[in-house]
Image: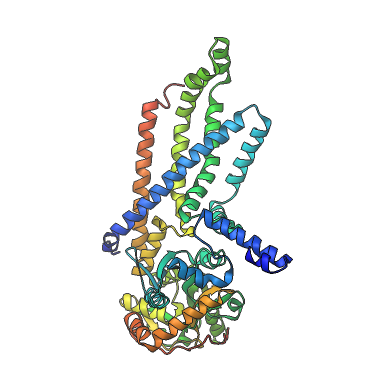
Length: 218
Length: 285
């Protein structure tokens, strides 16, 4: 073991960790927006929207992220649709994560007892108020742990975006391994960065849980 | 379109117009794409930039040294681009994405060293050779039991899946008195790692790749001489219909061979010089 390999590549790894974090955060944000839309579609009264939401979830959960990325970047180009590498990476992560985030939201909303909404209606609450004051606050609280789970998984899955030519953390660790012929040190270095980032995510999740009082009320 | 004014509109001209329109619509969304395949060279010159792709994990040809692209291919493509009067944009893609990316026109040329084989010649256009690709073996530095290639009989050898060097190893091994166990890896670096860890007794790759690995880690690795394979060569590849671009690249490569640039590059990265054929050789494998 030659720890100096990690030290020498520290700048390169840090830069790559920055790419991993940015691509993942952008993917998470896109996924959240898509997920919220899909969840709304699935919970709406409109049969067609419901159907579209369900198809979205089963499609993007069913297709491996790697295949999705290759499809967006290489296959669409055959039809003259030129997607830049970064857009393909964020789009792939976001589309895929959107399906999971939609289900997390749907699960959390379904976990709020039905009677509460009915009772609020009986008491004369407006529909908007029922969502804003009763359903969403509780659902948000319930969804924090699974969201943090999903974000940590997405961050690790972001290693796949190297197939479209983005120099993220795993790819850079591989580059270091091949140029130094010291794979153990290179991957330990990359692994430590992933661990550090995910510990930060978990800590942020803890803060969010405390703020929202997860596990106490509801 | 001019063609449909001067010539009667045939199905082909309509098709061409359609293709050109498709290409133009592609240009609106992203990087400009060639209107038709024949003029990639013109397109490159107009853009002032040659877009190449390689996997920067193939020392000494392609190395990402703390984020800076280096190696034989880097030095050579820079010399070629200077000759063409354009700049170069380098993409680092995993090997499995490179040939699909070439066909999808994500870049103009693949400068990852590709061994010339009959099968590949049907799908891609090869440049003249850029380096020797003869298959050789590498062992652990302290292993006295392997002194010549034939000594791998009864031992375990690792190599990268789908490479011509691995195919040559299989053929070589089949003629040895004792069977050789062959382990296939996604990339050579894993095979080297297993060699260092003692899980395989030798690694197969092209002679220049191994010689460089040995020079970098002489405490761990040593060459098994001489190279066992038949002489083969590495080339760069382009799309089958990009003849004008490949011709221009070939002229530029041959110029580096006559003006001493190639010798400089070889001395820097291989520590020795090698003679290369001036035309694309007929593949034996």
